[in-house]
Image 1 (cartoon, one colour):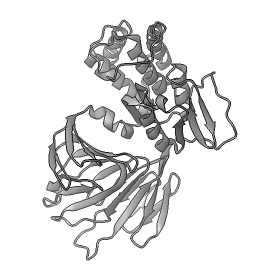
Image 2: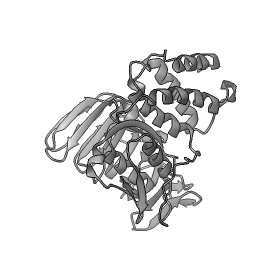
Image 3: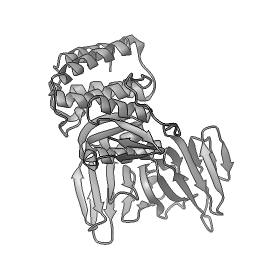
Image 4: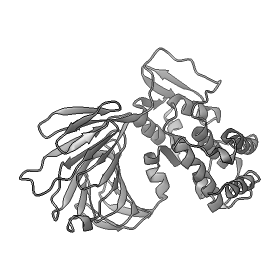
Length: 382
């Protein structure tokens, strides 16, 4: 986006005169700079621009008394001439995206417990012989056709057939994430509390299969045309996903009763013991453990894969579900003093580089929760 176009859109947004596409373009332009820790100073002061946006939003919030907000996320509304309730969601998004280091004055006294750390790149690699290697920043590892700089794991392709291809396991703990490039050049981003089983090499012409034992993973699959037509399959406990060359996301956590497969590009076939469905881009399949049926619906892909971009996007999600996501990333338990509070829904964009207490304080300050307390190494929402 050119400087002149950016400033024109910004001024129109501040005056409430942008349509859906223009507003989405402007906000995603902001996010692209925020997630890369860059800012084009030729556009002016980021702080000054941010303050202008927040001033408009806060003015709307002053007249708002209800805690109920629309379920549509801010970047899919038809206009940004919005009600103050929807502006609350925008305030969450902008304040968390652009104020990473700001500390609020309204703090909660807490007992002397362990610090809640922001998640980082870390994983455990288990080799075929049972050897366990801890992967984390600052630790390099290399053996055979695999190497790691502590932030990603790379397998080099092996020429020819291997008599017995070994399998490795990559386990991501709570509070972690990791990237692995498989031997066929398929790229996989693994979210917190996930485990992937995969071969250390593939044979061209034969099916390439990996298994997401649990958790969430984003796959960018190397096309079958580069591997003598060999298909790529991802197996989970409840389903199989067959692809040719595509990008997709699978979420299959142990503590959730539904498996979600979201297609970004290409084409995939999702199947289980009872049925099969073909997904097109922007479609998501859902398989419930209660009945095993496959339901397919269109979704906002940006919402589903934002975790890989360093963001959490919540679309009308109950607080109890948001707490589950945050618990995985910050490796701490979040519970509710009143279970009914967990059913409160709201929209928001949270930056994964924020401290958890900053996020909770922001939510508290706009009256979605009354208070929170850190006790016995867990967070209690009140």
